[in-house]
Image (cartoon, rainbow, N blue to C red; front, side, top):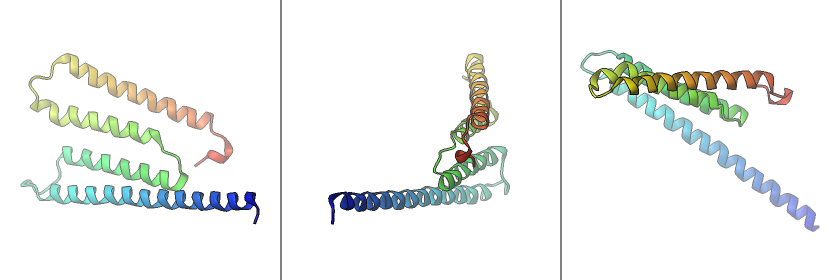
Length: 142
């Protein structure tokens, strides 16, 4: 057995182990997201209201976006960064819609800062979407 042949076999073994770790890690992450979302859903439905509030629904959207991001990464081995931006926008929106009325100390500057953050994140999502469509090679298409 030549030294080059041995090196190729070791490289193949290493690549296989990395791929197995990658798949197991994604299943663990995906399972954790599903477990957390189902647990949160069960807690939501046990509220004294008996139904989900807007705060709860927005939280479930965050879980949905995390699950979609993990699924896309599992299929393509590419992290869709745009989903992280969507999650950040949803989290800020959730804070503005729900938690802001309970915070008396939130001044106008912080409100404007959060709204500007959503604007910047939206612009970044637009730039990412534009660059994906116009600068993606044929073999990278989803």
